Amino acid sequence: MNFKTRTNNITKVLYVILILCIVGIMVLSVYSLFKQNNANNSKNSDSLNNIANVNSNKNDVLENDATNANAEDALGNLYRQQTTESTTEPQTQPAATQRLITPTQPATTVVKTMPPPAINQDSQVISPTEKKADSVADQTEKAVEVMSVPAVFIKPLNGYVSNQYNPDTPEYSVAMNDYRTHIGIDIDSDIGTDVKAVSDGVVAEVTDDPLMGKTVVINHADNVQSIYMNLQEAIPKDIVVGATVKGGDIIGGVGDTSLIEGTDVPHLHFEMKKDGDYVNPMDYISF
Image (cartoon, one colour):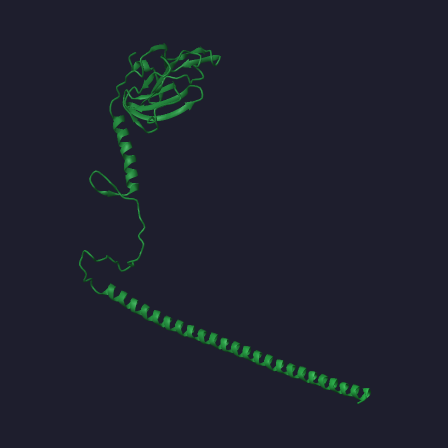
């Protein structure tokens, strides 16, 4: 065999091999496509099965809800029937275990709590409003009792009367640099000395007079008033408007709060009125 013939044979063999390779590749491609189609079909089948299962579960849930609703309706009807029977039939339980149910109030009604009622001395139940009204009435009654007793007057404090009652002749005021009448009396004493109510009465005013300082006014029987001025700023806590006092009760202390009489020695400026008019305190009290 010559060289040319051998070359032709080799070329033929190569062609055959190439054709076999191409055929093999085509077979593999067809097989891959077929396998991929089968896989896709399987996935689609699984998806359809899942969807079917979901729909089935949903239907089961809806059926269960309908069943439960029917059961609840039946229970509600049974409860309403029992409630109607319990409110119409007489109670058969022992008195110790029965619950009081009024026709217009369900047993589950929440009762609002109210403040405990006040009990008076006669063990009668009264409301807080009535109690307050009684308290005011008691205070008024006490004031009337005090005002109805004839007044007996005592000295508001022991001391020297340095300035007399003089409503007609003006006197020179060093502090104000003018002339003024003196419609009370000045009783000299140390600052802080206790000042006492001159008789039983009711506190009418507790004020800070711009000229005469801390002032307490007490109403007495027979339409008499006693007026205490130039007191200390601090007074007993129970000395308030409307409070009843007894003769001799401490209402304050001698101070130096008066602007007009600030240059004088410490003293109590004391005034009295009868039927609204100023009177001489020394006509009622012996000093």
